[in-house]
Length: 451
Ligand SMILES: Nc1ncnc2c1ncn2[C@@H]1O[C@H](COP(=O)(O)OP(=O)(O)OP(=O)(O)O)[C@@H](O)[C@H]1O
Ligand SMILES: [Mg+2]
View 1 (cartoon, protein in one colour):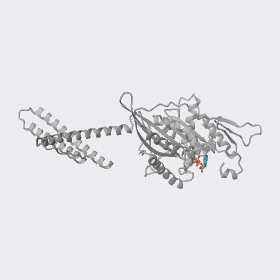
View 2 (cartoon, helix red, strand yellow):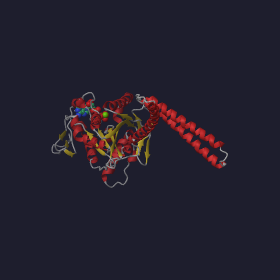
View 3 (cartoon, helix red, strand yellow):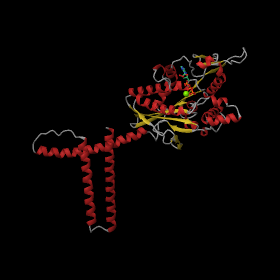
């Protein structure tokens, strides 16, 4: 109970049986014979429980699945002030009080540092949905509204959402901090802002591994960490009439989430209204689709919150019945790691070609030296030399092509048509050479930036 609840003289009406995974809630206005209402869940946690207990028992297996290539989602749902943000983020400065998000960062990067035969690529995005508008929390222009788009092969995505490749816990924490700052700046301008917006931190983990078929395979797991808006307004006005309309306007995504959950569990609906809100569209896979999903429902223990807490428990109880169909995402088209690997292969091929050129050159050098019967150290091939070799090679090629072009033009024995064809061919080869040169220049520039 918080200070306000204690000062108001509220009593504790919630009991948790951690072993049974059961919550009981007593109606403070009920008759003395009225039995408390009980709900069973996969796990329940007391207010005194440690963050690490929740993480290790409930969240760790989900993040392990993400590392194997499954999608995973953690929702925190509940009335304002009941601990959604505490559960997801916690108190960063106190290791004991760190929430699911920082714990998952540690988990992911510890796993990666211990892996041996896999290559990983981790990237992070951070967004929020406020009044049905999507904002990128990592973009400097924080007021820019983003759009949802759909691709047949990859499904729904947010156009222009920034994502950052992170190599360790420090880097991903930095991403989180930047986003949190953007959020807090906005919250000073708007009352109760944080409680009315949904914050979604997305971690995408790509893993490449050599398969039994001798080919590299990429698995991609996406982890959505969702701190939902406070559920109270929706449920308080969840009755009828004007107030329901108002609530819907205030948080359409939250009521759509409720409708999607209801439609999924009633078993009769053929239509699931995912398209009714940004949140449900974006997280369609997390509800009844290709993802493993955890919903953490947070409730307060005080009698003054009896109704809200009961509604939250019923909501969570219904959600429990959703059946998802998670599968490992193997070799998706949009894997960034594949793009990187292809670029590395291109670079290697370029380097090899350069290497061959310098070998050729070294050979001829060596021949001269041997003829002179001298033994000298050939020395290390430097980047600059390779660079020069490449330049010379391109220059030589260009000269040869020019010569051939002139020779064709001067050849009076060739019929006009044939001549034209050959000239066009040469033109094309020169064009290709130009492109190659440009690509080499770009590559060299990239190298320098990377160093
Ligand atoms: N299990 C807990 N142990 C200790 N403190 C907690 C716990 N849960 C919540 N708190 C504290 O209660 C206060 C409210 O929690 P929090 O901000 O997480 O609520 P919230 O559900 O995110 O609310 P809102 O919907 O307004 O964003 C915070 O000061 C938080 O530190
Ligand atoms: Mg919060």
